[in-house]
Length: 118
Image 1 (cartoon, rainbow, N blue to C red):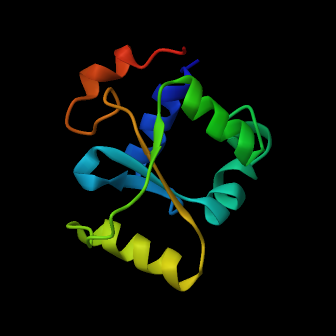
Image 2 (cartoon, rainbow, N blue to C red):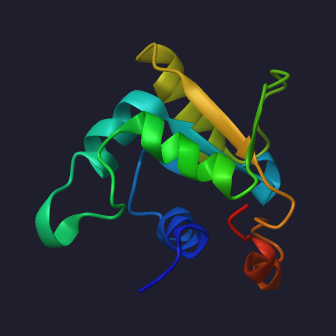
Image 3 (cartoon, one colour):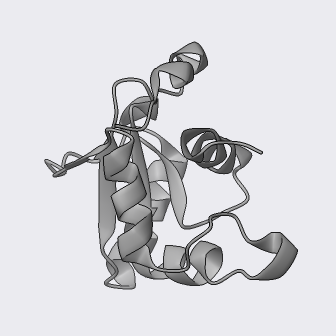
């Protein structure tokens, strides 16, 4: 079974979830909070991704693995999918959370093994 950062990586890379995506050119993870609760944490049974169904517990896991919340300095996103996801979230008035971890970078998958629980 995969550890938390590996599950998160697979999820962001899969592109099958509308609630989570790479931001800042693959340096951050962006999460549309309301949609994520429904689309990911709301899954049960064999489709369940994480052990928790609570947003607070999921965010605690991110913190345990060294992710830090970052504030967006709203320059528009360079990539179209990122831009569209942000537009969708803005029009739905949902909050987008951005989390950064130097070892969680789309361009450097080998760094993932440095993502250790504190």
